[in-house]
Length: 73
Image (cartoon, rainbow, N blue to C red; front, side, top):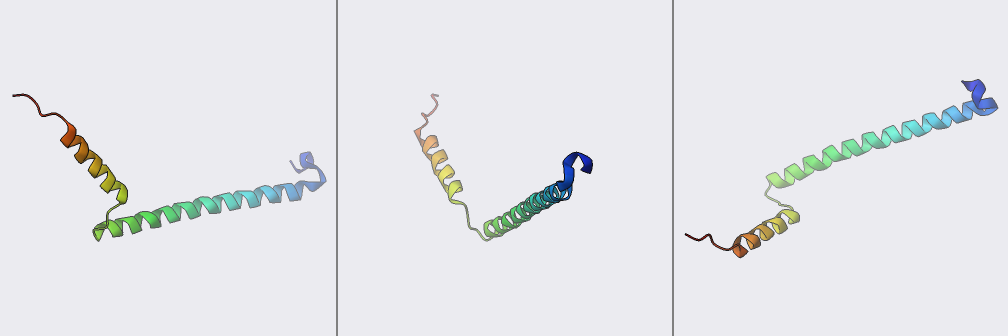
């Protein structure tokens, strides 16, 4: 295979290897950060801190519940 790449095969293969290592490192870093953020969110929710988006959804649900007409007997 190095014959197909010519005299610069070492540089080409090294650049691919470095790129693969960087991308793999970024993927591992993002996965680790995701786990850490989920753990932190679980800790905050356990302490009673809620998300603002949950409050907005609750208010929207309450508004729709009050705006709905009552069923006829």
